[in-house]
Amino acid sequence: MASPSPLQHFSLKPKRANLYYMTLVAVLCTLCYLVGIWQHSTGTTAITADISTSDSSCPPITRNTTIHLDFEAHHRAEDLPLPPAAARVAHLPPCDAKLSEYTPCQDVTRSLKFDRERLVYRERHCPEKGELLKCRIPAPHGYKVPFRWPESRDSVWYANVPHKELTVEKKKQNWVQYEGDRFRFPGGGTMFPRGADAYIDEIGKLINLRDGSVRTAIDTGCGVASWGAYLLSRDILPMSFAPRDTHEAQVQFALERGVPALIGILASQRLPYPSRAFDMAHCSRCLIPWGQYDGLYLIEVDRVLRPGGYWILSGPPINWEKHWKGWDRTAEDLKAEQTMIENVAKSLCWKKLKQKDDLAVWQKPTNHVHCKVNRKVFKKPSFCQAEDPDKAWYTAMEDCLTPLPGVNNIKEIAGGELAKWPERLTSVPPRISSGSVTGITAEMFRDNTELWKKRVAYYKTLDYQLAEPGRYRNLLDMNAYLGGFAAALVQDPVWVMNIVPVEAEVNTLGVIYERGLIGTYQNWCEAMSTYPRTYDFIHSDSVFSLYKDRCEVEDILLEMDRILRPEGSIIFRDDVDVLVKVKSIMDAMQYDATIVDHENGPRHREKILLAAKQYWTAPAPSQDQGESQTDS
Image 1 (cartoon, rainbow, N blue to C red):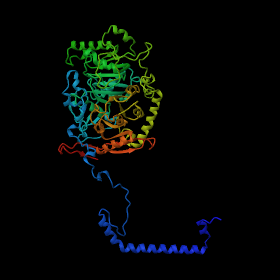
Image 2: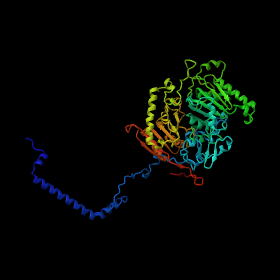
Image 3: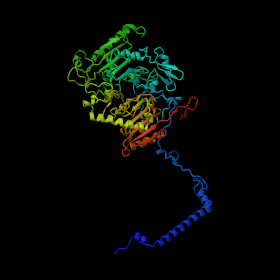
Image 4: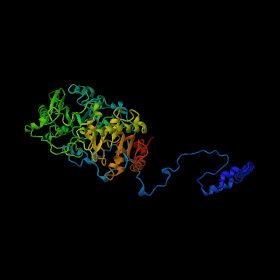
C-alpha cells in the first residue's frame, strides 16, 4: 500500500497541532521584529561610520529622512573617463568664422589654378582628400531661421546672406532691395521690369503653361531666381543655376528664398541632369554665348529638353532693333548674333514658334524622323554615336546631337508620351513602361510609391517639425531611387532635391524627371554644388551602406552638416551597425541623435536614426575668433 504524500499527512493531523504551530510562528516573528528595532536604534552610528569610511561617494544613512526615488541615468557618456586618443571619435570642432560661406568645389582660390578659356575655372574643382576640412562650417553671427514660405519668396534676413553687392549692381533692375535687417525681392529682373509674374504671363500667351504639360523648367544664369520663384505658384517646378562669380550670392539668395537652385555653369562639361529632363528651358539675359563654339551650349540644352520641349530667350540679341543703343553694342553685332542663334536652332531641328517684343520661343521636335533626313543639309551637328545620353557627371560636352529614342511613325513622341501634371506624378513613367530602366517594372514602381507613403507617414510621427506644415521648405533626398520620398510629400509646402548617386546600381534620375520632380547627380565623397545652410531637412536612405569603403563616414557627415541649416533635421535609414557608427560621430558633432525602430517593428536590422542640429553661430566680430558662440 502506497504511503500518503506529505500534504495528505499534514491534512490528517489534529486541529490542535495546527494551532500550536501557528502560535509558535507568531512568537518567532515578533521576536525577530523586536530584535531588528533594537539593533537599528543602537547601531546606526557605527553603521554610518563604516559606510562613510568605505565609500565616501555614498550619502550617510540617517533617521527620519525622506527618500526620493531618482530614475535619472548617472553614468552619462561625459562622466566616463576618455578612451585612449587612438580610439576616440574626433571632436570635429567649428571652423574659422571666415569659412561661413565655404563651397569646397567652387572655392575661388582653387579655381584660379584652372583654365579661364570657356570659363572652365568656374566649374567644379573639388579638394583632394588631404585638403578636406575636418571642422564644422559655422553660421554667421546673428543668423536667424529663414522666413516661412511663401513669405520667404519676398524676404530674407540680411544676417543670413550679408551681401549688399547686388543691391548696388542691380539697383535699376529691381532684383533685390536692402531694408533694415532684411532684403526684399520685388520680383524684378533685367528683362522683366514689371515683375516676374507679368513676365511669365507674357510667356503664357506664347505657350500653354496652364494645362499641366509644362511641369519642369531649367533657368540658366538665374540671378536671384525670381523667375523660378514665381513659377512655383503655377505648379511648375524650376531648377535654377548660376555660377559663383562677381554677382555674389545669387544661388545663395535663391535657396534662402526657398527656391530650388544649384551652383553651376555652361562651360566644358554637361549639366548634371539626364537627357529629356525638362519641359522648358529659359534664359533671360543670362550672358551665355549661345552661338559660339559651333552652338555647343544650345546642343547641351537640346540634350536636357524633352521631346516637344520649349526654349525661351529674352535679352540680347532678341528685339535688338529697339534695345541696341541701351545694350552698348552695335546693331550689326547684335543682328549677327541673332542670325547665328537662329542657324544653330535650325540645325538642331528646332522650330521657332514665335517672337513677340522681347521674347522668342523655340520648340524641340517630338522625334527625330525629319531631323535624320535633313542631316544631308545640316552637316553639323551630326548625331552622337554610342554615348549614354544620361551620363552627366564630369562628362565633357560633345558637339553632336543627342539622338531621341526611335519611333514607328512621324506622329509618335520619342520615348513615350508623358501624362500631364498632376497625373504624371503617379503614372508609370515611360522609361519604366518601355523597359529601358534595367530591372524596374511597372509593378515595382507602384509598390515603391505606396511604400513611401507609409514611410513618410511614419517619419512624421517621429519628427514633429516634418509634420508641421511650413516648418521645412528645402528638402534633400541623398539617395532618391524612384523619387518616392518626394512624391509622398507633394501636398506639403516643400520641394525636394532628389539625388541619384553616380555609384547607384541603376540610373533612375530620368524616371524622377518623368514623374514631374527634379534632382541631380552627386558623388557623396565630394561636396555638393551649393552654399552652406541651404537645406532644412536631409533624408539619407542607405547612403552609408552604398559608400562603405569608398570614403570616410565623417567626411560625408561633415558635408551634410555644412549644407544643413541650424535647427534642421536628418533622418538616416540604414543597417543598425552602420547607424551606431554614424550616431557616435553625430554625438561628437553635438547633434541630438536617437536610434529608433523600423516602421515595421524591432525585428528589422534596418533602423532609423533621428538627428537634430543645434543652433550655433560664429562668434561676434569683437569676440575671440577661435571660439564659437552657442545659443539655445
